[in-house]
Image (tube, rainbow, N blue to C red):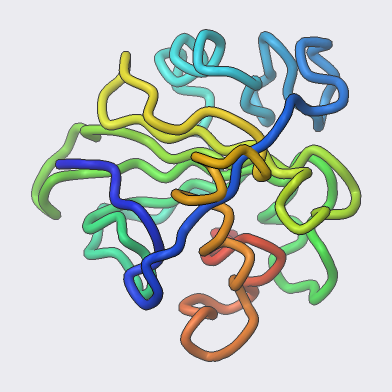
Length: 187
């Protein structure tokens, strides 16, 4: 299974960018080298051990893996949202700093072990047209295909360009509460 590029409806799913303000500081809500139980760290070197610790599995997660909702290119997935997203899921405004989700990626709906992950974390109060979102995507626990801020060219091409459309119209609102770069807020 490969990390798909782009929204399935428009083949454009990402941004990329420079480092985040506060990256490496471990500050709550902004990631950092170590992250926390509710906040993924920034950077592949820190994300992999954080995933192995399984913090996100105590978040608000969908019950089971399922065929991805349109316009997702991820095939089969299960979304887990942190408390920041879950506690603001019925709001209509932008997500607060620290909003994060982990999407477990699977080859088939019957699989019980993810083949990869897609992670995002809001790092600034203003989404900044994707600049204040960190994205990580990997096919396997040790392989990073996307790792950076939303304005980075690879991240823009594979994540941000699609996520910018979340909540913009019916085709980009597959789940209630989807908006501001988040398609499926689990609560």
